[in-house]
Length: 151
Image (cartoon, rainbow, N blue to C red; front, side):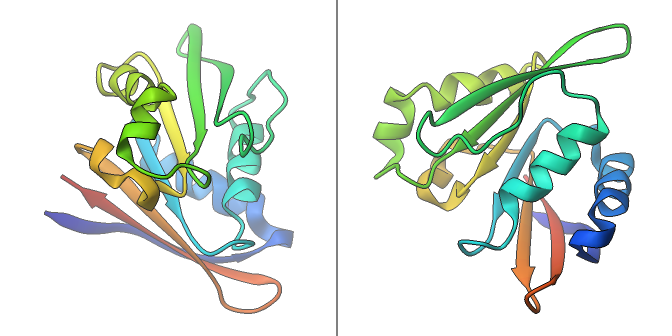
């Protein structure tokens, strides 16, 4: 089962407003799977989203580390975001070996949130419910985002 929950067009000039609208509508979810072509703006959007929620750590692409862990304060406590990049993964087994399943399990039990780039590389690890965020380049400066609830 999947339902479109959120749809927005934005540019880099108004990405902070797009991130604020996104978070206001969807902050209650735990697993966010960001899909889009190379250069579509997945990492850029995540960076602005983390800035919005006052992540204390430096936000960067985890392409080579595979997993970055960030912390932010909300609701009176320390909250964790696992930023996962599955671009270099070959399959589900490699994702499990790299600890990706552990991060997802933490999110499922409410102990963290997961922001996953290139989720199509190990989609079987996503059990639901989760959000599938498709980012599409409409021009050199404009992006369109569609967020679908899965599971």
